Image (cartoon, rainbow, N blue to C red; front, side, top):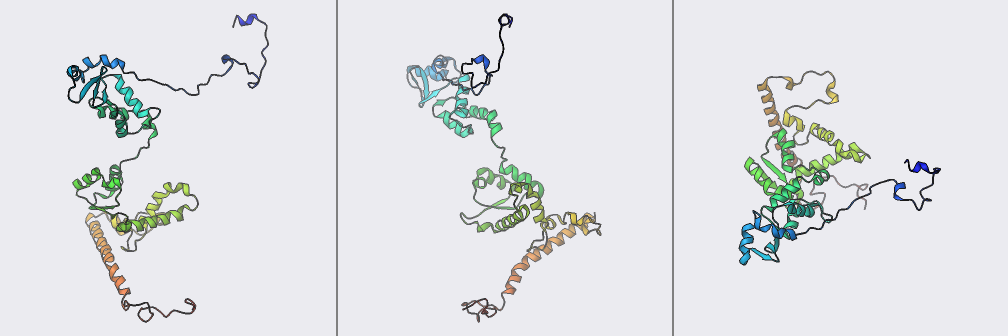
Length: 332
């Protein structure tokens, strides 16, 4: 700066588009992107074989000819056409390129291992790939944290209701997996799968899903983006409503009482379940379950009674217990 001050000069502003001969010093430094290109070299590993703990013996035996699956070609040790990589940083570089290289996609252990094993070999190669994928920062930041279905089931179902006797599900791969089958076999739960392409097997679930879909549509209206936030309220509303088959709410069947809603916040006489006597509470729940079972068994009987007086046959009005069609409803 002292040298520049020896010259007389005047600083004037000039637009950037007019300053076509501006040098680098007059421009603002901004790093747009960087790209690193590394060419893996393998010449140095020729001198590492003889002292390597994994391949020293095989390299020595192959000096006089092939040794089992190992052989030497142009100074490199191969195992079934796969280059043997001695211990060192080269293994990590190979896995890093196979896992997160420019043409790779940060896939999981299996896909990364398949890429590495196409051309390279060293003992416990899978263990090395697993360790690299487990500490990959990019994968931890980018990939979603999807909970395993087993952990999710225990957290949301078993924690609240205990271990089920049976589980009815479709034939999704997660329900047909060895882990899922082994888990419930050891817990004594029987797995029931629906027939392929026949969802009628799980008819109860289909009815519940249809009811929940209707509740969502009536609750959301046009604001469809908040449907996930409304699920807890929809679940509570369904469990608080009386079921047509049991004549009770799901809350009553499971817990023996209905939880309070804003409607019940007004002063009311104490309900039966406010009794703290454990014996009377257990007796009340037992009677409640008996009543639910009776209502459930009464369903087919009520349906059969409605069919009395009606005989099967052709579709004539004389053979069916219906009124004669009117001219207004069935014009000729």
